[in-house]
Length: 348
Image 1 (cartoon, helix red, strand yellow):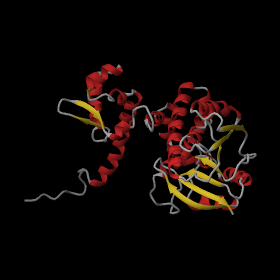
Image 2: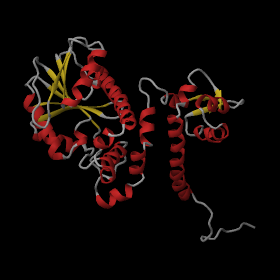
Image 3: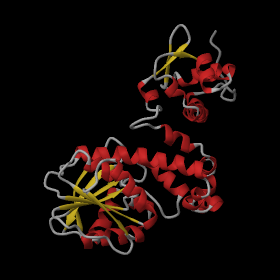
Image 4: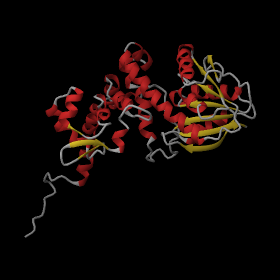
């Protein structure tokens, strides 16, 4: 005789499994973060190792590591053989130090202030303001007094900038371009990735005075002496014009840091500096116009919401609106493997 399950019993349902799975994914991430923090991926670079061997090499507790590493097998980070030796999957390889490494970005997620802020989204939803700023002040001030966190943040930004720069260099036709003006170019990482494979280009980094020495040092170290200049300036005030035409003006992950008024001011100044033959390259993550449509950029938008006041990702229509107001017309949008899209524009 078949027993009918009463609707009031506590038998888990598929709906429960979805929610429990989301809760458990948080714990899986903590293991991934610990894996990155202790540099375990690099210990597997030369071949499979047991948990005991890895614990010895990393100075960790062998019993604890033995219990925790299996969690990363269904997560797609590790494989294990019949002898209990672990090796990296292709996803696990991204946690080794080197080009395109994701180790720094995972480690930054558990930096104490970042971790606390991510766990307090409820407060941001109540106030509409950055939880980070409410608790710690601006991220720049916070990092200025914490050299270890600053080093980790810088490492993360460099890794991301290298990926974006390589994508732009490989997917945009610079054949007729003479120079690239990197507006808000920081340490010159994106610019160096573009100049490297395009030997006919020269470049300019525009940023505030404190960033200029790092940009100069980085570009020199990349063997680009004689092909670049640095300009100390504020893109809210003005943007230098190009010495040669046609040139490309670059805004790589700049606009999403600012509210609409500030973003518009940046675009107006870039447009004023552009010649008729010049073009604008923008690396941003356009969201769907449908506010309910899922998109990977939603999580980036969440990070901007909780970390900065006024910062946000924008829809394609919103970006086009800002560009239209500045007297610029979109000529193309190309998704990049590193996450953002490359938006090209020209003067109307």
